[in-house]
Image (cartoon, rainbow, N blue to C red; front, side):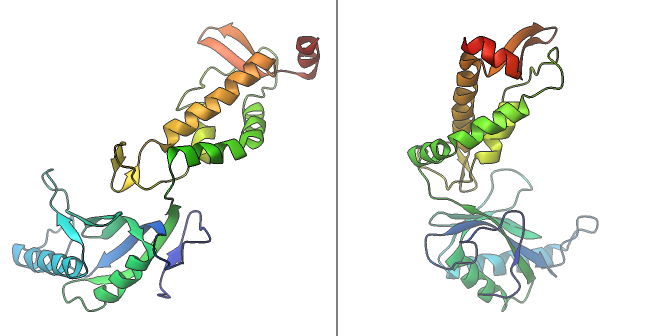
Length: 240
């Protein structure tokens, strides 16, 4: 394992494992290639750099795909690994074993230097069913969090923002996990884009159960239907 790898955000137990099949959100920090937004590099320097990057990746079994968007960088893919090749960061989903191979290869580069590798969250190989099962295992925790989030200081205070960008969405994002792209489902850069939606549906279901049970009460407000966690007296009255 390379010693320069720095962990950030939410380090997981598998982040530094080079066992095949483990993936992480990975950033290879690139320097010394002449790239400068304020002082654009020469065409000669850029061509030499581009050619070397492509040669290193293709030599190690990666496929380079040019972007259809003007000015956007190319992507390198290998299996389920998918890196965006910005001149300052090669970033995206990378299998841990491949990360080590690339870092070693970059040491011999003549047109750039990989100064360090930042490794963030693990990207899980998880089906929709497995994600839902994970959420099921957190059901009591999610219920407690919702009751805390909807607690207000006074009985005449209610919360109306309960969607993706409101309370339910925040709880869903908190428990969502990053997943590898799944065939046939919306994805970008090697990552699935449906996880938060699945988690939001699950959280919203628990939220509705709390409303039906009287643990969360409702009232019409000037901004629409509002919600808050019931006080002790209200719960007793509802239960009777």
